[in-house]
Length: 135
Image: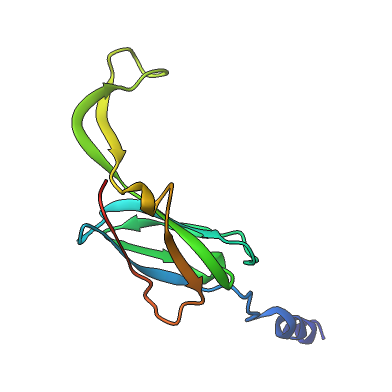
């Protein structure tokens, strides 16, 4: 009897579609795959969802379905750091004089803080690839 109740409970909830979509693709910066970075999808007015994102690794990103995006329109922000060739002091709480490589945002503002990139989810075309330019 209990096994039957478990089965019925599973029928009610197992495999339930949460309405979210897996989003994946590649990101290039000046036609070269971004080695490390991040991609963020920000819901636009009329889109019911909290947005989401993923790390970019070796030019690829993947937002799995369980953390995916609800249908709608999104503004896309892409970020990646690059070394400047300079060293800067780390600061507190590390010991004075501790140095690290200085990094700056490599991606132009029109692709992140002032992004003009957009995506519609679900996309009729996956992978959803983006090509951006350096500052």
